[in-house]
Image (tube, rainbow, N blue to C red; front, side):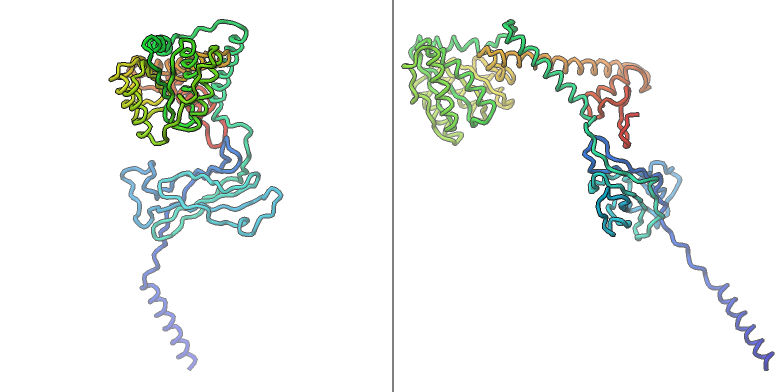
Length: 444
């Protein structure tokens, strides 16, 4: 009996081993290859509120440029996303919650992406990061951990804007120097502006013909710089008209502009010694509606036929209507605006046109104020320096393009890269020939 039981046990075990040998073993789980070389660093030139996270793409990522054309990735291992997790290792004296102190998902990045900026960090806290690759089935690779913690720190200066600060200081130095020269009595040369020189001729012609002068300060409100520049020119026109005994008509499109224009003209008549000739009713408000205002002005032009029409300010589609009407009645027309789309109409229809910066320089040209003249000269010298840097860059770019060598080394290529990336770009002082600021904040 005992021998029979032993034989039965032996037979059962043999059959079990045979069945196990015949059954297929479970297939190994296919997971994507993990990303490598995870690097985390404080974002340079910021207020300590972000961290840069970089890694090398997984070998299962079809966007990995290191994969050769012959290397095929198993479709079940192709990376779909990268999962980034983070935990707090030091709260900088603050209490850290259990959730923050343990690994938790903070972002999911698409395939082919190898960097991410964490903008949800706290200044002075220390963080650990890890990243893994996830395929379309949701299977995750092993985790790739950063070599150490990172602590966001606030930088006192944004060194990527270093050259911008240098340009601002140079511009300010030029302006301060020329203002000081102008105040000390030194005569600063300013190129004559033909349109402003023609104002005396236009006012004189209106006086001889016994017809009024029309001045339009644009259709913008008093808070626009072009309107203020136009009122500066109005002061000169009104003063000349007061000296010659001519009448000036100033229709306005804004009530505040009317009030400012009245004060400007009154002060000009007072300065000319003819306060009794000032007529406030001739500086009047029409309407805020654009084309209703134009209709009122052109109606006045056709009825009264002013001898001179002066347009100084911001204009839109009404510019051609005004200029063509003035041209039709045979008036001398002087225009000035900083609206690029309206300049062609004024140039085609008016006798003289102040283009762009000439219009803004008119206030300095007419007033002779040392502060304005010095500012104008300082800005011109600053622009000259900027153009000089551009010319140097164009010279190096042209020289490199004309050489047959494809090498990117050498003084010319280094100078061109430095001008493009550092002086005109946002890479700060950097290093000559490249100046690329790496993620750790140095410029090596």
